[in-house]
Image 1 (cartoon, rainbow over the protein chains, first blue to last red):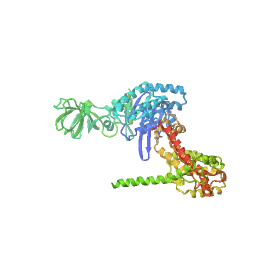
Image 2 (spheres, chains in turn cyan, yellow):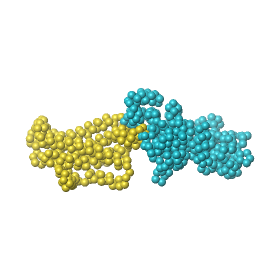
Image 3 (cartoon, each protein chain N blue to C red):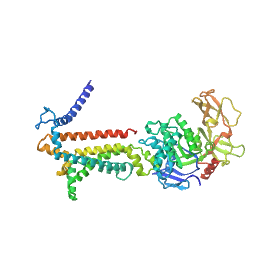
Length: 373
Length: 264
């Protein structure tokens, strides 16, 4: 039995299906990121696990105990809210100790834990400070400490970094990972930021339209996306549809007749309709024709210079598509109208079934176990 | 040029309006210190003579005590009922909610004299003997719409995620209210209670139907004395009413700022 099991969770609001048959298993000590666009059901899933919303159907089990009908205050699950939700009338110490106070811990025990927590989040001496006197980053850390202080079985974080500026977000990202490693607490982290999801998660759950599209190791999700949505959502890429051919050298025959050599992916057969995704950073741009297979000529339509990187929008007549490509901003930057060559190694070509998920739920479960190994 | 004159006209009018309101009040306050029985204005000398007389007159003292008792009881009831009602109306969804809000606000709209007559008839009809509780109950009813509106508008601004946070930390609903919701909205509840007290303390029109000899409130005493004979002690009483109705809110304001000093 897994540590946390979400079974066929479904949540309906009026006519809207917010979460549709989501099943997920989490092992103890894992850091899971749940990612998807706004409205994909990730926060609803979180609130159902926390007990702040009741599922329409399905069940949630933690440590073998069925939580489904248990109120939030009996679940022993810490939550870090997007707006932190620190109690404005309580000091930092009182905020952090709140969970212990509710569990009837003595004042001396609470003081001890508060001190320990403050040292963990590097805010020693903040005991008597009020939340509004703290900066956004400090409030965020206090919120994390409060959710961890009562030694919960599970911690849920709902976009905890989204209200902070970019620099702070990056440093807190590392900080959160460190805290999770030190405490070893099982964590589910919801975000709409794909970089955060890929970099922080031991496993990543990609959601869209209330469905769990893929739950896998981040590398697996990035390189072997289970659906066009996942491929498109994780990273920047250009999509081209075609048919997989495995009879000779494996390749995808594009709709206009062009051929892209690919590696064969498990679970795919000759003749499958596939969506090919060319990742920006995996396509190389050169002035002269490269010796590689999968080389196409095109014309730079637009240049988006970003300092270290430069994004080219290259119109490729053979592929019938405008491909987005990342180039090196430090070298020569090609101008619009320039004729260039694009190439991509067969093993770098990512493809999925052109519609829906690759395989069924069982297939997703297999991927999960692959990711865990 | 023209707009400048318009502006001056507005300022002049405002000044006149405020003066016409404040000067009579000032005359009463000053006259309360005038030792003459037939008060001329301005007074020739000032003394606390009538204050001495006032505090020796049981009729006045009793009225002040009754008014304060009724005021405090109404304030407490309005605070409690107003808070619970506002919580229900803001947090719960139920049919005919909007219609019920109107019903709740009717005491603000119905003329006090009607309330006075209607309540008297009703209480007599159900066989409830005239007592101080008539006044407490009815003052609570009259001030409740204001208390309800004040607490409700605070609750509209309340971030309910704070309650979610408390519950995930192990607080049941009651504890969450005690530990989180109540402390945060308490300044608004205090405002509601002060307003209820002041409304109760000054209510005359409806209250005159409900008092009897032992439950006469301050405004009733002022009215009946002013109608029969002008004794300068009325000025003292009126001055005290002014002080109470101004000082109580001021004290509340200070407490409120203390309460909310650590809050956003």
